[in-house]
Image (cartoon, rainbow, N blue to C red):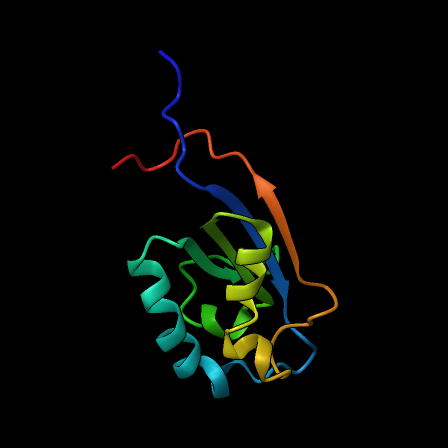
Length: 114
């Protein structure tokens, strides 16, 4: 059986935070921006990048976040970048280290099939 045909391309975003990032200050706008992207199917998965010593189940996990990962679907890498650059974590210049953000094409071997 062959894998299902994908309708769009997948991209993995790695967005490390700046030192002393103002993540909490911008989180409400970040969430407001992200929810429609999740509902539209553009954002497949997202979350915080943690240090090797942290666990997702830690009570203070939000305080340990070092950056953001996103798995997104888009027609092109340019479209993925365009949506990324609309996020307040990017536009504020106070959260993500914009010089270190990467958007990499990936193959998702077990996609959610609708």
